[in-house]
Image 1 (spheres, rainbow, N blue to C red):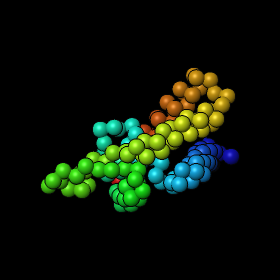
Image 2 (image 1 turned 90 degrees about the vertical axis):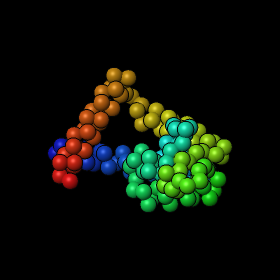
Image 3 (image 1 turned 120 degrees about the vertical axis):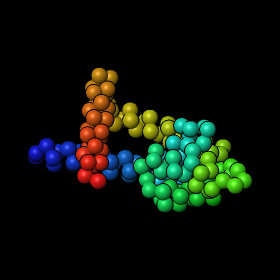
Image 4 (image 1 turned 45 degrees about the vertical axis):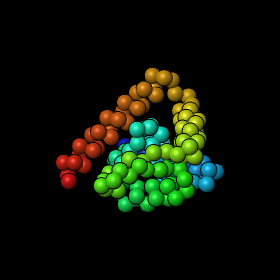
Length: 148
């Protein structure tokens, strides 16, 4: 196998595994995989986030985030404070108590999955892996930006 096939194959397999695990774990909570990152990111920002901010943090388009947030709000996981005269897309969203519980579940599962996925790596190898992935990501993003 050449470098391209190896890189794409490994990255794709890791991504597919994560998506499958997210789907299974979230089903236990009565949620879907696409809810995961919204709940996680809201838990990391107790001051609240707008749909636009979540769109960037989750790397999802605004329409997909809006649908996800509507589902989460309808099911009692998120709430918003809509000040008079403000546009809905600028409204900050917050986790409810139910959402906070789901976010804690996600954080615990994520930690467990990272531990299992990284078994056998020394702390130095893990640090090097993340630094390498960050560099590759930045390089590919700059290449993509140059082609836009």
